Image (cartoon, rainbow, N blue to C red):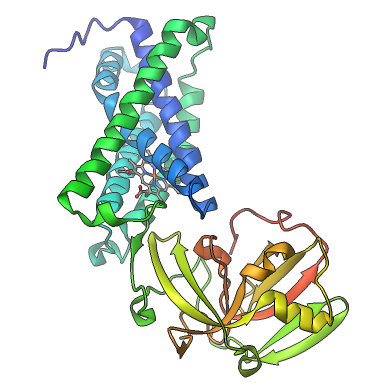
Length: 354
Ligand code: HEM
């Protein structure tokens, strides 16, 4: 197609760059947010915005190609940070490709790539592109202008937004119409793996966490100055909960979990009602930990069994936390201590550092 390429006005190049920057910032922010939210409608809105921003980048490719070609006609000595710019283009393309593959249902893992799956590659590319984007934006700085917030620019930005959402909606519609696996994924983008069949549920850990050689045989509960030690048998109180585990690795499974409801357990230790404020620290044998609001305790279960059988080592035996509505990294495995603390739950890293 003959675009009016080489005579692209300077402002059009600037507009293309600003449009790409905006979409990349939205894709990065919503990508991270997609891991922080676990319940609808937040998941649906955030993941849809992420998909639209990511796919929207494709709409600007013809214009960006012209900007790149025009830049290449300038003497090499006048070009700014060409290395970072090329690397940025490559990793962003990889992010869009791998995000698309995951969404469609071509998820891997691929043994030729060392067992890495599409979503891991995708998040890696997303994180690297954030660093490269910072270098590129500093190197090829463009001063903000009053006209950037003018009516015409806002209309153009709105048109880009509508186009991006339409493209995302078209892809989603196509996935459903064709019956592709991606058409059945959850609003978080996760694919179903092993519902009601715990042995088919993947065993995954957060970044550097791993299945401990000795997960410990008992649980220490600390609350209101009391300290009680319980075995897995003590915790098998027959409390049941059907809950959906949605892992940030891109899969989900719904299971019947059994064990002890956390609020009843803590009330027993305290011999009374739980305090109104405060939090509960849930600590794993590996040192991994998460702090949750104490007011959530009535929705939390310390599970010893799943699908009527004791938990396997990979799934957190002898005791794991079941935290419905929260992404998998909240479901602490191999729990060895539960402690009621005064500190608010949000005084911790939003994502585990282990
Ligand atoms: C340069 C930054 C990024 C770009 C351009 C990008 C782009 C995309 C695209 C195009 C998709 C497929 C959307 C669809 O077809 O519906 C996608 C999916 C996804 N991305 Fe990203 N992404 C980026 C960064 C991230 C980051 C940093 C994370 C998480 C930390 C992330 C998490 C996800 C998830 C969970 C999905 C699956 C959502 C679904 O299946 O609808 N992305 N991304």
